[in-house]
Image 1 (tube, helix red, strand yellow):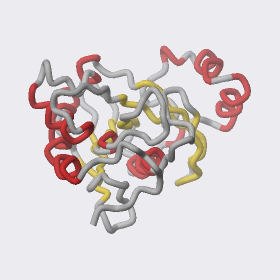
Image 2 (cartoon, one colour; image 1 turned 30 degrees about the horizontal axis):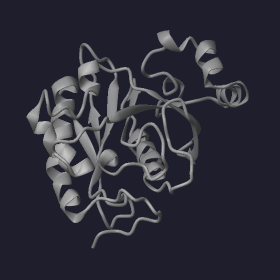
Image 3 (tube, one colour; image 1 turned 90 degrees about the vertical axis):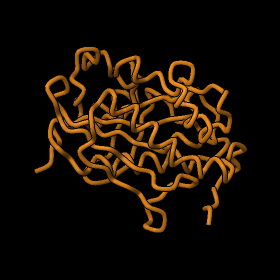
Length: 229
């Protein structure tokens, strides 16, 4: 049975689109593998286990271990973007990413909590977007910001059926039109300290970015002082 969405989102997927998600997810994962290598693990939120997202069967997070040119773990979601956000905003289709120096199994859980908040949004609420602050008290964390992922431009250029006809699989699932166009925004989840959160809340995220010299920060910023164990 298809779960009911607790919102009046006018862009809910058809049954055909939901069934197309299987091939579309494989296509997105294949695209990620071209840039990040083979995933070392994946965490699946299966329907009926209390971890599923509305209209997104088997939402999952992939774990990519460090390698020579990427000396950190990468966690990437697959499946959130199949349904656009119900609130209107500049980034309707979102996937999430995070980076840690050590393997950290808290990260897939936190990405799921954020994905759930995005998926459960209702019309009239603020839409999630880059440079937002987000708060969720979970696993010893509370304060976060969302930033634009700093990845290869070719990786972020997805789906692009003109360059890669196989990307039409993704378009079919996400917008119901293999000849249509959409942009998938990949947002990075970054933990903040209480002081950083206060600065961003009081004076704006731009002030925080300047204070921490964001342009030169490592990808693992925010997680380094909260490594497991």
